[in-house]
Amino acid sequence: MDLDLSPKLAKKVYGDDGGSYYAWCPDELPMLRQGNIGAAKLALVKNGFALPRYSDSSKVAYVLQGAGVAGIILPESEEKVIAIKKGDAIALPFGVITWWYNKEDTELVVLFMGDTSKGHKPGQFTDFFLTGANGIFTGFTTDFVKRAWDVDDDTATALIGNQKGKGIVKLDANFKMPEPKPDHRKGMALNCEEAPLDTDIKNAGNVVLLNTKNLPLVGQVGMGADLVRLEGNAMCSPGFSCDSALQVTYIVNGSGRLQVVGVDGKRVLETIVKAGNLLIVPRFFVVSKIADPDGLSWFSIITTPNPMFTHLAGSIGAWKAISPEVLQAAFKVPAETEKLFRSKRTNDAIFFPPPK
Image 1 (cartoon, rainbow, N blue to C red):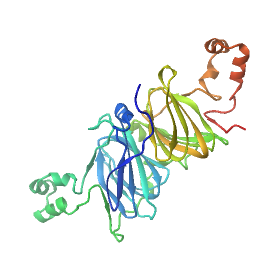
Image 2 (image 1 turned 90 degrees about the vertical axis):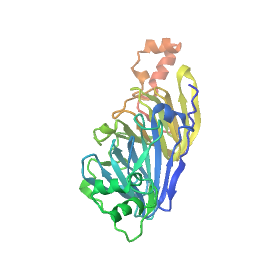
Image 3 (image 1 turned 45 degrees about the horizontal axis):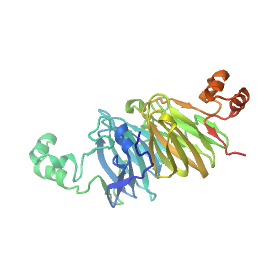
């Protein structure tokens, strides 16, 4: 496999004084197209408003920074207006209409990753805006708008032409948007920074899994996700997705070393990853990371709602399950070496603290 697996940064696609929309291009990150995965970021300044839209892809949204309000309308359902903040993960199935608003001084940044296999362009999201200069109203003639919404000429003309913005606009500071309703949040979002930890290794790292148990909507999206936080100089065990899923990883904070090993034992990637990088690990390839002194955290989607991983090192590593004689023969080493190998990492699972 001669694909370029090196991490990439998103590039600006469009924007206004209300904010910007960024995306990763499959021409620069070919695994997006091959894996039918899209990835993008929305950044809204204070009073920035992302106009209502729907997409050709199911997605998982993750709030990287700030706080704001999101409107989510599932097919044939009422609008859910929820407060969102850093660490929130939100499942967005096919057909969902969303809008996003930032009323705070801090920029609101939301990451989107999802499946483009049913989309118009492999590896890219296509959004359909309900309003704005590129919204669906502008495509219909006035007589169609009048008939469909039972309005007069002046109203139809206003609906078609008043909103000149494209995708993102900035609202007047005095404009009052809907207030979030606490009961609307249930089942719609999970804060990964506050959720119970699925794995927590002292001085090494922890992980929160997003699956059908804690956010059932991910079943409709068809993807799971996780937030992993490595302590400074800690290591994540070499491992692979054992259910043929792709893993798409966005580096949230920090930096560190990363290695990926693929077919025929070939190291296909060795690099430094930093905040803002996106990378995709091909199916069954083995990946491992070592955090720099300031630590390393990442958010990943996995292309199955309840992912499974095989780890090759640590107390739950696959090697521990293989009989001693098989290991000795496979490595072509004496029994003493096999025993030494097996005796290590008996207490550490998945994450390993820095060497003492």
